[in-house]
Image 1 (spheres, rainbow, N blue to C red):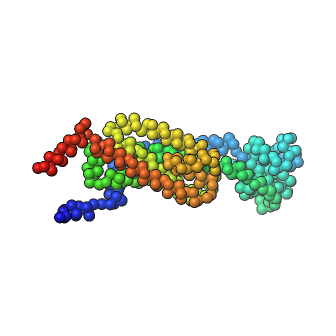
Image 2 (cartoon, rainbow, N blue to C red):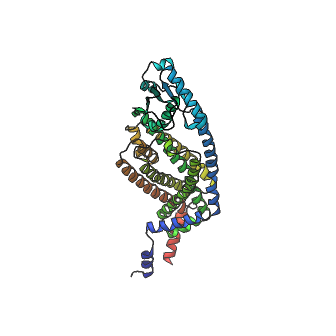
Length: 415
C-alpha cells in the first residue's frame, strides 16, 4: 500500500532548475543588500579613478611628445612660406593647426607615397605642388582630418582672403593588411586582458560564500532539502548576477572617467566582427569563463573547511589560470593552427581564445559551437563538484561510520 505522505512529498519536490532558481535568488539578494558588497564595489573604483587620471595625463603628454607633423615637398620658397604660415596660425589657433616641416635631402629624392611608407619621424601626411594648387598625400582615414588645415595654411601663405581657399588634390595611401592585422591583435589583447582580470577578480566570491555557509552548517541544511546540483548551480548564477552588477557599476564610472580624459573606442581598431557583436560576445564569454572557473572553485570550496585551506587550495588554481591565460595569448598569434584549436577546445582557455578570434576573424559559426561546448563543460563541472561534495563532505565521519549507520538501520528494522 502506497504511503500518501511520501507520494505528496515526491510530487511537491522542486525540480533541479526550480531549486537552483531559489538558491540563486536567495544568495543574490543576500549579497546585493549587504554592507560588505558596498565596500566590495567601492574597492576597485579607486584604481579606476587613479588610472583614469594618470591615463589622461599620460595621453596628453604623449600627444604633445608625438604630435603628428605634415611634411612639405615644395620649392624652397614655397616650403618656407607654408612653414611660416603654419607657425603663425598655430599661435592664433593653438593645436588645431599641425606643425609643418620641410623634408630632408634624402626624402626629397623620393615620391611622397614612398616617404610615408618609410615611417620615419612623425609624418602623418605630405603636401606637394604649390600653395595655390597643393596636393595632399595621406592615408585614407587621415585625408578628411588634414584637408581643412592644409587649405587654410596654403591660403594664408599666399595672402588670400578668408573666403578664398585653394582646391586641394588628394592622393590616398591605402592602409596595408599587415597594419590592420596588427591593430586587431591589439584589440584582441585588450579584450583578453580585461576578460582575465574580471574573471579572476570576481571568481573568488564563490569560494568565500561556500566556505562561510559550510562553517555555519547552512550548506548541509540546503543539501538535505534540495539536490546538491541545484545548490551549486544556484550559487554559481547568483555570483554571476552579482558580478554583472559590479561590472555595470565599475564600467559606468570608469567609462565616464575615461571619456572625460579624452579616450574613445577609436583608440582601438574595430574588431573583425564589429563592435556590437564583439561586445555581446565579450559578455557571453565572461559569463562562460566565470561559470567554468566558479564551478572549479565550488569543488575546491567543498573540500576546504577553513579560509586558510581555501587559500592553500586556490593558489594552484590561480597559477593554473595564469598559465591558461598565457596559453590563450600565445594561441592568439597562431590563428588557424592546432595551437589555436587546442586553446578553443580546452574549457578554461576557450573563452579567452574565442574572444581573441572574434577580434581577428569575422566568421561567427565557430562561436556558436564554442559557447555550446562551454555550457556543456559548466554542466559537467557542476555535476562533478556536487558529487565530490556529497562523497567527501556529506558522507564524512569517523572511521567505522558506515558500519555504525548499517547497525543503526538494522536495529531500527528489528525493533
